[in-house]
Image (cartoon, rainbow, N blue to C red):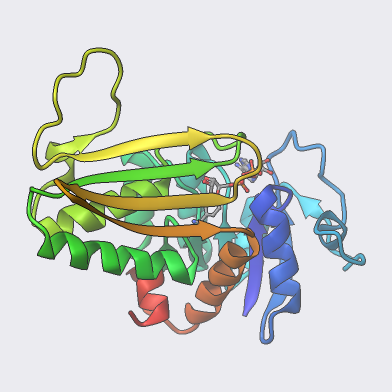
Length: 265
Ligand code: NAD
């Protein structure tokens, strides 16, 4: 698989470069950054802390999508529309890790999936995808006597909240309960909020330090509490899952796939 990385100088981009370079059956064909990036012209492997590979960070996304079989995108929501359109124009599959997409950006991704294979996951770790399945199962068993709260913590640089994974966990809990997440979601509590509404799914966000990503789903009733938790200690696992997804794309028909499809869960 010929793999290209957009956002190649980002925290995830550098790991994706490193993971692509060491993965069997994968060839790194390039990486791009935004036009003002100070990393343009810098060797991709050296950005990832490895010996130079002879490919440098560029800014021509079209050329990258044209050279690659699949492009991995961990950038910013506002870049998603351009990347989705480029994937269609050049017939490349797309693996999207960027979180915090708005309705317009999400619609562009879904439109691209009518023409090419697109994998989108709020979290590319195997453990979190298991957690999603377990959350739906537990939520289906426990009734509204069990208040569902989702707590997440990430590093101080994260720009969207709650995390995409927390929202996906909320969706899994809502699916398990057979309710509409929008109708029961309690995203912000501040001041005199009144008592908790039965059936709500609450979210709490913590930010600080270098925390890679921690998520807990709490089912709290009178007299007992069940907690499902996942703690990521290295970003490498996201990069490994994304590159695994990129390889899985080979020969896949157009469509919007999830990491659960990749894992066969
Ligand atoms: P980062 O800020 O370190 O990196 C983003 C990179 O994208 C930067 O280098 C930036 O210059 C570049 N960029 C921005 N706009 C661009 C454009 N138009 N073209 C090319 N490059 C562009 O952020 P990060 O920590 O690497 O996270 C990136 C995204 O990935 C975030 O949305 C984050 O939430 C998400 N993320 C997802 C997962 C997952 O498993 N799905 C895991 C970790 C992070």
